[in-house]
Image (tube, rainbow, N blue to C red; front, side, top):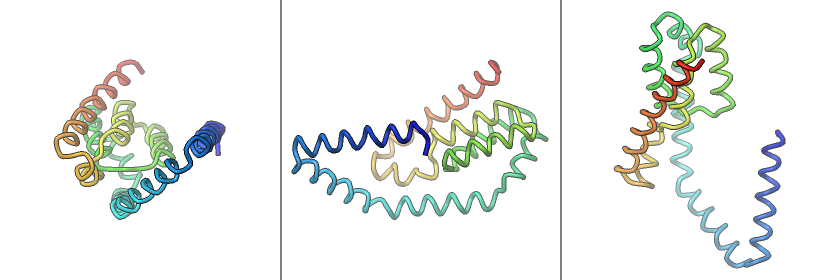
Length: 160
């Protein structure tokens, strides 16, 4: 565990105990409510994790690297933006994958588009978000996130 994670845990625990001290009943009621909400979406989260595992099994990193090196930057950027949109990978997997793509000769724009859409756009989580936030919100959020991800990739490509 790194120092920043440890600091966040300490801050969270301090505020939690402060909340218990201030109003024990409200705090425990909030904990019960949040655990009930988590139980309601646990199945959806498990389905998303299974879909991620399936996608990562079907598309190995080596084939992604080969595609990136052989195609032009614009096409690779668009492709990897879409791939990042439909994939949900934890950061501790995504950043080393981006590093291996860079070592394989991939340009900065496709890598940035992949990482940015990976964290900002959620096609895999679309049903869960739609259920919780509504269709209009999810479409606007994902559309704007995709557009800004492409913009960020282009800016990073120009700057670096």
